Length: 458
Image (cartoon, rainbow, N blue to C red; front, side, top):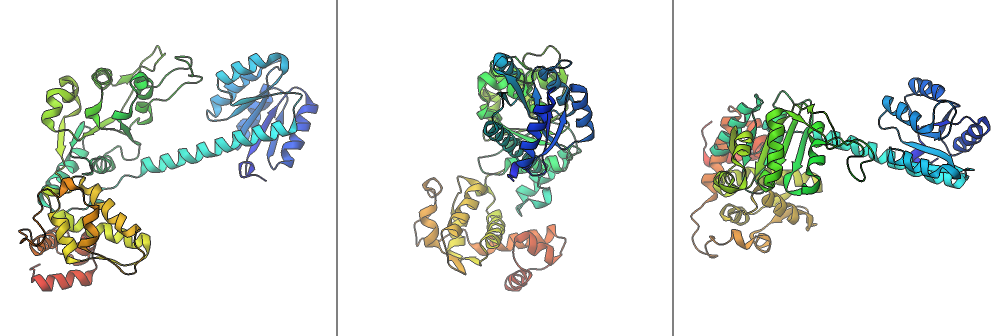
């Protein structure tokens, strides 16, 4: 029995009893459950009582209800039901028309067992994969980190998060600014998770990747026949985000003509699918993000009317170099995850930590995480110790420009920053050392040792 056949019921509909009987015997031998009907009325009744039907084989030419009409009736009950049309050689053109109207494939009579086996198996495998992808996408959209899962101790990031927490409670559009790799999407997901829309979809869209010629159909959907290849209605991105949050990433790269079209939707709160005659109401919350500065956006990157529509609240995430105390907790947090993944202890020598604190991180948090993961992935040592020598070859020259030469006295010492991080974590945890240690990504024993070493008051 094939994987596709597992727990799958095939509905066979044909007005020829001998053909339905033969097909049923063949498909049962292949491991499928089979239901048979001789007209559309019987087929619809079977579908109502058996929700496990995963494929319908429909005769094209039947006296009361033809195969195309029956396909449309079945799909009113189950829009995702794959359908294959059975037809004689003289009606292949009609079968092709059925495919244009949504059928997956067709079989020609007299039926060849090998062709039936191959096509049924292929369609059901595609159906299984589609269902799996849909499930994974749904799980991905439901996953949104909370504000409590964000890793930081710096005062500047605390102000950013406090502002985001406050605006999350409203439906106001939010524009998140920040360099590449600072965590703009992570903050956007946290805003969604803390909002009244958390139970619905968070749909991210890369505005720079939207093809200009397809942007309307991608965003707003389309009706069958609206353009070549539109064999069925298409659900647009706005409809996918209904009652949820639409995240417009890299909004600064969106072409001006696209901004104008999107502005109308945001103003009227409705979309008109391509090829459609009726506008459809949409209820989405907009969170946008860009690595452009606010001045760049307002000067030439965005239309002024579009900018003011999406920038009701502006939140700017500072680069990592502007909050070096966060480098400590982010490093500890990342190493802790890598230790779990690779099932070995990973330590950072003092010189390596000092180098990270002096490095300007052009790629921000993403660069720090990728740097540490690269070192962990390329080592088989257990325990592993990351040294300053290990780091140097992996650092971006753009982030080394301001570093003092090796051996020159360093002005940024690790102790004050580490002490600051510990004090900050204890304040956030309201003095609870276990919570503070978890926030810092270190053990309680390490925290106690550091408290004793620095004689930090709690």
